[in-house]
Length: 252
Image 1 (tube, one colour):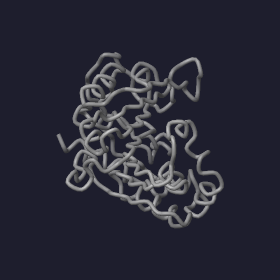
Image 2 (cartoon, helix red, strand yellow; image 1 turned 90 degrees about the vertical axis):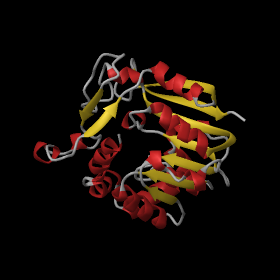
Image 3 (cartoon, helix red, strand yellow; image 1 turned 120 degrees about the vertical axis):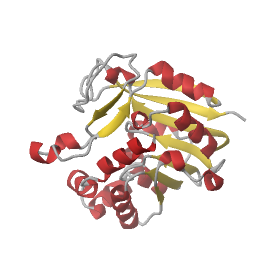
């Protein structure tokens, strides 16, 4: 089971630092934008944070730090968990340029050190499409629950399961039967930005896409109470759902 996550790691380490520089700017440039208006950088996710100061946040698969660094600038104590050293390099340099601090743990999310982080965080936050990287959603949600203090909040924002049957986000991802439980191979998100000769060199990722009911039931079965479920339109066509945000509270 672990080998698919090692495969995903290879994909997310491929040219990642250079990609962030090209698309987000050099770290010092990105830092200036984050400092200018950190709350705006959180975009639609800002509404799900009641406060920021001294709140311990676990940013799951936090990638280049595009949400973690604004949260830190707003006063949160942020720990990023991500599989890519390249992502850490970029995020750490942006944080340093912004004169703020984030902790960044590189490793497999399913192997987080729970002896250290169990019942540690006030908020677990994820966004940008990460659930499909984990083939066992119950295992994933169990770990999210264990990271939180009793009464802590999970903010799970992800690609809408509608993307199983329609590529409404233009990610060049294969579509399938909505109810399929098949594991598929596909490109990682950045590959489509490169010329075909480079794109062909990208390692493939291994995906398991979920239905709405699979996600909601996994949250419920892992001792969360669902407080809110929002659907967001695709950024390319507002007629179709593109993302969702689920708010779960860890049961006491």
